Image (cartoon, rainbow, N blue to C red; front, side, top):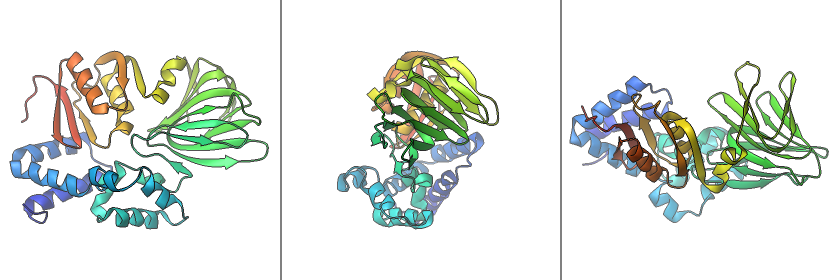
Length: 319
């Protein structure tokens, strides 16, 4: 089978649809019906996945970690030229964007630092504060003489300023964390931003001022004022040790925490999304963690391709 027949054309159409970022649950169900309708559909999809995975098996064998990202952010060019540069290095056409984005978040390529899927990176700020970036995180550095700060564009980070010689801060949207000494976890995804105090204290400037202490989490969503909760510092920082500590988390929440660590697509059935689970999962082995979790909850994990997993009730059969 080649990649230019009717089955391949349909597979490409689905890939382009996924790249739009606008697929609904109904669209995903339609894709799954198409995938399972004819073995030739699945064969075409698998072939397309392999051909559009330059940053996957083949690419990783040929390039040292971070090579593509370093190549792209080493020069200040337009976002479009940067993306074209990635595709040229990877050897794929425009439809490879969807596959490429699973490995490197393309929409933040020109940030000061961008981590790939599954990659963590340490960054030092002027004045001594140390920052650890989680996978698929993008930040801009804003260093000054009297204050060193970092702007979090997407993802999550830990900032340790216990030994900092100058005040430091973390900016997320319109909210600014300021501290002279402390250790904090910060995250922003899907329009929800949270600041968690691990050690020391900080001030949050968000149109009005809030005080953040160790053991507190402040959450901002839209234009709403901050909502404070009690937080466990060990749980909040566990990802730095490659762990996800789930404490009565829904399966949907756990899957969201695992997504930045795997370059594939995780499709979660709404029928099981609200199931609660507790445990310690290995972030470096997201597929194995999902399989272990599914076994404990008596669920079924179906791997439709090397980069597509579906989690559903154990009794569910393909329609």
